Image (cartoon, rainbow, N blue to C red; front, side):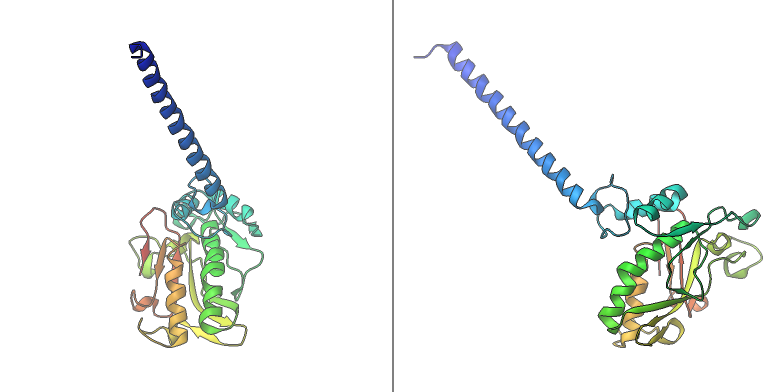
Length: 246
């Protein structure tokens, strides 16, 4: 019969070995997770946003931070290799615009709009990840240009004399009226928006790009929202985490 102290020593050694094995397994899992996050930064909440990365679990939170901080937004544009120009602040009172950015290379017509950094960042991502793929997938032609109705308008919501100020008052919104493809096809929101069940290609294209805008803009209002938006998508970057997609 083995001495009691020998048995106790072996039991202790076995328990220690199990703890060491568990620690080694934990370290291996942690290292594997870190490597996976390094290769998939869209899922890493600590990895800075790059507009060229696919969307992932952490993307929405990064967009929220970008909307809240102009410096973070400009760093995202630089990191994403987007050429942009920062303009001098403009406006007074409720229509003061300290954040004025324009993109050096933009398919928007009649001219590249001046808007907040957050609007320009979202527009870039939306065009690259949603609009351009939808043009090829549904319309079988690359995107040529996007027609917009402007960004800045010093006014309250719906032009009322009182009440909340529009996001357009600070250039934190843009209205999109239509799209032109390289084969000459024109897609107009006022003419081609239809019921969601429509089989018309232009209607399906508009539905897809409208839905995709909700991934990067804080507010998306379509013709389904009300009569005032029957001819355009209203896209803005209102602050906060609660988005509106209608």
